[in-house]
Amino acid sequence: MGESSSARIAAELRSWVAAAPPGARLPSTRSLTRTHGASPVTVQKALHALTLQGLIETRPGAGTFVSRPRATRPHDYAWQTAALGAPAARVAQSSSLRPTSPEAVALHEGYPERDLLPHRLVRAALARAARGDVAVTRPPSAGIPELQAWFAAELAAVTPAGLAAPTAKDVMVLPGSQSGLSTLFRSLVGARMPLLIESPTYWGAIGAAAQAGVQVVPLASGVHGPDPEELDRALTETGARAFYAQPTYANPTGAQWSPARSEEVLRVIRAHGAFLIEDDWAHDFGISTAPSPLAARDDAGHVVYVRSLTKSVSPALRVAGLIARGPARERILADLQAHSLYVSGVLQAAALDVVTQPGWRTHLRGVREQLAARRDLLVDAVCTHLPTAHLEAVPAGGLNLWVQLPDETDLARLARECETRGVAIATGDDWFPAEPTGRFMRLNYSGPNPGAFPDAVRVIGECLAG
Image: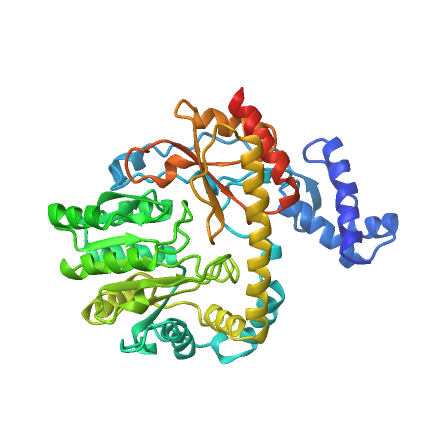
């Protein structure tokens, strides 16, 4: 008798327990084996499952009994308010993280669905990593050398002739780019110091900045990126020495800076002796263009580059690479060692295994085609069913559409009504580090069930009109 048999017995016993009074004694294991025609092991598994659920309890030497309800008193945690004091930063959970029912059309999430991930490569890589020495040894704080070399080689491949390409020693491996942003804001900016940040921008960067205690200075940024003259003015007026940006397929706008805009921004950054923190989160999600990292055009240490593999490989492999040069690298590494010591060698080895397999490039080509079809399907739905909305540009890559809604839109009400009808959306206020400049929503076209996109957007339109 297998797991299904023990589950069946547990279900029958659960019904028996529900009808029995507290303290009632269950039949003996021997009796249950006869009644159900099962082995003692199978019966014990069923009893163990009910014990874990708190439905029954075993008394050694006496038998097994229906659990008695325990009197509980309300927990009093009021003392913690005084002990903790006021929080240094109050960061609200993003609407893109809220759980929804399995039946809902999830247009709010920020991760690709399983069909867009190299799940076979991931499973095989994890199995191989678990059999290797990395499963029982501590990796270097900066990362395993082979993975450092891979991140460096990826950027070196697009570095123009005449510039010094990054090397493995410039790379640090992170437990995901989110922790990397926290590290960068602490080590390159510091508490109460100004940090320029695009507006709108990734909500996680806003939260990381708040937790690091830095003073956020919003810089307007649209589908073409920030205005270099405004960047120059902001650096001059605030004295900021760091600017956080997403030049390629920005979250949430999908913006990709042109080569000319990138050169202008780099010129301003160099003139002010500042850092550009480049978040290349969507490097593997190009659709109609290819990524062109600004870090490849800088060998003087002005650009600190972060590239995550979490979304393109697997959310279970939280691995990212950070490239920095000069004294900045040493400060960043010291902060990483203080907060996370090192990244699991198993995760590093598995990530490296995936991205160095011949099937990785084949997978990325397939993802590009799928994302193009999904994006176009969602764009058509928005144009058809949301006549009062505005889509400024169709993104050339990434995972999201950034849709502007009428100024009178009540975003909270819209989200609630959509969710009651089985559609989850992410309201746009989360992506603004200061006051929103309008009413927006972010729609993810990499989620499950793309065939439901048209009907889902129709529901949004009806809720918007109502």
